[in-house]
Image 1 (cartoon, helix red, strand yellow):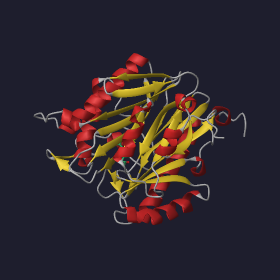
Image 2 (image 1 turned 180 degrees about the vertical axis):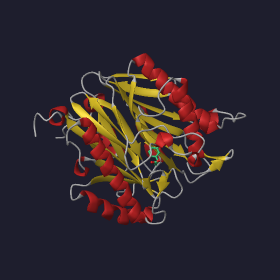
Image 3 (image 1 turned 90 degrees about the horizontal axis):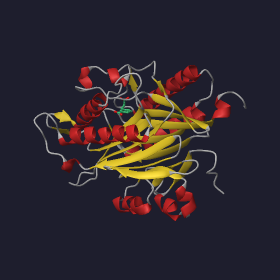
Image 4 (image 1 turned 180 degrees about the horizontal axis):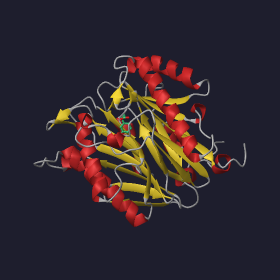
Amino acid sequence: MRDTVSLPHGENLSIAAFLKQPVQWKDSVLGALCFSASALECRMQADMGVPCMCVPMPRLDNTESICEVWHGSGELTQGQCGDIHYRHDEDVLFGVIALPETLFEAGADETPLQQATESAYRQVFALLDTQHFPYLFRFWNYIADINTHSFGLERYQQFNRGRQDAFLVHGRDVVGNVPAACALGFGLGSSTQGPLTIAFMAGRVVPLSIENPRQISACQYPPQYGPRSPTFSRASLVRMGQNEVLFVSGTASIVGHATLHANDVVAQTREAMNNIKAVLAEANRQAGKPGFDLASLSYRVYVRHPADLELIREELAHCVGDSLKAVYLQADVCRQDLLLEIEATAIHPLAYMSGEIN
Ligand code: 3EB
């Protein structure tokens, strides 16, 4: 039997396996992050009632699709608010929003993607105000054709403008106390552009925002990376019911603010892992206990060129050891010279984190 009782997360299922689960099981699901090369398969879970994000990204290490499932505890409440589908328990709210850019017209100074982003984030912040989940833990951002330029600006930079504006409109911090995140691109390989797709998690206990001493805070990147800085921290440490969850943001081969090892995928992998190690050390320091190490994380690795999979996998196994848990997806990374981005999550029972058991 699968253990769904004590951990809010711990399952990676294929979409097919997800759909086959019994109703009682689905009733305990807060939401899911699904990745599939097949848009059709993606659409299948839409009518289940569970908030599911689905992004058209092929998995590289396996032919199956992959869903990361988050469970709540106790009775769940679900709802729809504007374009957001959400579910929550007493501690955590999980939501998903997918907004087609075609709903927006280019304005004098605002591109459709920028407006879609601002609208999505403003809807999220408004929902969290009304549902009383003020603290954002984590955003997952997926943007079609992320490296393409239009209206004189790379699309990732357009996204950054819309995102930061929404934070400012809602009086939220844009440095320091900001959520963990990732931002990846997908291309559908056709003229149809997929919607801006965002999942998020929020709660009622203030999270710890963690930065990486090896990197400049992304909120303070110099203007060469775009007119507005990204709004995310390197990790967030949050309490979720009886567990403590560490969300490590998308992490790449960036030191200071510069990309290192532009054409060397093995060196980029090693550098990204050095960054994750530094984030873990910082998390342990701020938490005042040595709880997190590389082996305790579950990884999702976004790979720009599928041919690089084996080299990346070997390097990761070398860094983490035999217990490596990783899923590999094909994706575009937000800087053209980045060949991969790695995100990770660790979940510990609170008793362990507070040192009561060992
Ligand atoms: C970086 O460190 C790589 O814009 O939300 C990583 C994680 C990256 C999150 C985001 C971007 C984002 O700048 C890119």
